[in-house]
Image (tube, rainbow, N blue to C red; front, side, top):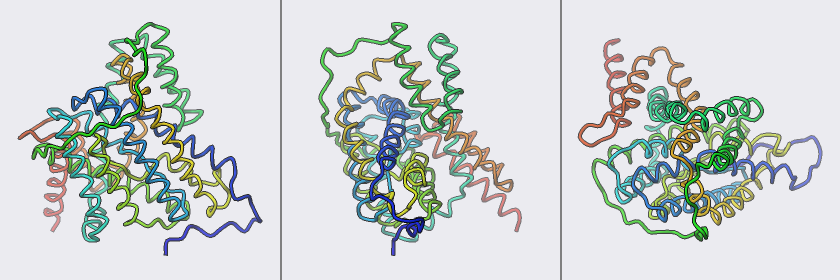
Length: 396
């Protein structure tokens, strides 16, 4: 039985409060605006043209809308979904991909998520993956983006340094809204300094572009498998934990099935994986949304509606972001990933017995090394698991 926490006994409360709507809208804006620059960077890294880039963003928005609405309505829980931010960082840091080989990797990750939903032993195996090693791989992926903030500041201090200072102040006020505030400030500052490139006379209408997959073995192993692992370990499992911490009993296989199916469909328009929201989910699952846990679920359909609106404006937003200086895009992405990097490092280093394999995983992944055409995320994971296996064998 997949029931939410028991309703509060503090007395009757309205079926719908304004706080439910505002929580949903804020969660959507933070999730979208906070990492939109990273999604665009990922699309550009695989050589997507502007139409393919906007298609990827629109596809993700529609996926968020459909999956959140379906899961929230069906299970009467504030279940909200998001795109895979760690996955986007993985793609953005990759080399040698094309839009077609990237779609092939996205499809593999989606199939693996669906298989996890259908085959219980695979789900159990994923949960047995050492958390420290998975977190260290994620930290290695994120590390390069966070350091890029400061190389961008060196190259363009007038544009980037004020954003870093404002980010440090804004996160004291609102950790969730800090990146969104920096996005708005950065765009305004770029216009003020005259650093914005040419904008189209007429902003493009939202449109989806079909990209047929190419199944390249190097991309499948080097991107598809790590994308599945970081999506499961850094998004889906923490997302389930957020719901459980709020008193809900989320239905894991149906959630994975719905998000996996959505990922499979939207891969053909260039969109990467859909998964449970983790950090932004907490905006919709707490008592600030509604004091009665059983009446927080309408946040899901309102969150979905917010993403429909964002999908309509997606092509225009992509055109605006791509006209900004590349250093500013790097600063946006790096600042947005500082929080996830802190969390990943904390998790990776928390287990003293696995600290060395975790550090090895981080070092190999952050190095950006590529062997046999396969990227560093895979080799980092392999190195960490091998070191952990040798350590364990030595204790017997």
